Image: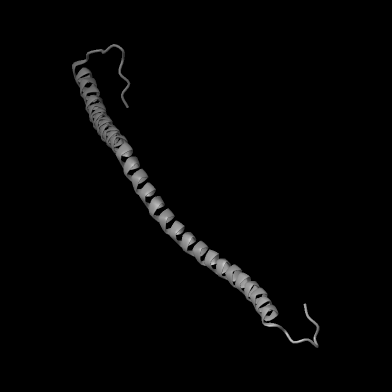
Length: 131
């Protein structure tokens, strides 16, 4: 712009300072934009994470309630089936006990009838096998 021997004019000095100031201002704005973008990204990420946590909590509660409401009738039916099965098993156990008692009683009757037949001399058909 000028020779080193020549003094700098006010116009040239203003131009040099404007150029340097513009360059500084540009670098400052770029750094500021960078920092603002970084801060904004951090705040947006935090807000998004918070909103996602709330959303997933709400979705989870919704599905828990929905699942519970859908499972309630199923649990009731299952409990009824279990109660019915318990009742049937109890009856089968009772019948098995009654049969055991009846078999013992029938064995006694067979013994008594055999003893009566021996004392009276009656022959039973088919012949009883007594031990």
